[in-house]
Image (cartoon, rainbow, N blue to C red; front, side, top):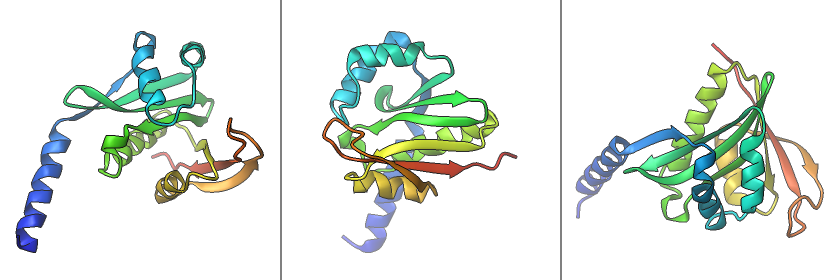
Amino acid sequence: MSYFIMTLISKILIFVYYKMISIKSINEKDIDLCYELDLNTISLWSKKQWTKEFKKEGIKVFGILLSNNVIGICVFHVVLDEAQINFFAVSHKYRKKGFGTYLMSYLINECKKLNVHKLLLEVSHTNSTAEKFYSRFEFSTVGIRRNYYKDGSDALLKEKKLTTK
């Protein structure tokens, strides 16, 4: 197959994907959905922790949907002019296909609308894929939390300064 045809097919598939993508706010009634996606991706929280997260003031939860199926979730906590990304994951099947980029771009735009000036997150120092992903969005490492995760790995504290318009 020629390069031209392969490129054309690739562009058509991307167009079709993006026509079927949506972002929706997720609420507490969707805890099972959140827990299941978490369990099948980064295994960060228990169901009880998910319940507590939804009860915090300032928490916002968004899901990225492909044909009405949630394939990724972002949880962030807004306090004054800062936001902390507490959870960000895309199903393994949909990684490296632009869905995480779509969700992160949406999150950044939402934060700008909320006059957030700084976006923060933690990522395991062993997760080089996530580190590369966040660096594409100009997150820089500003600190380390030693032995932060269950497996004993350190958390890299990442920060992105936002300019609001």
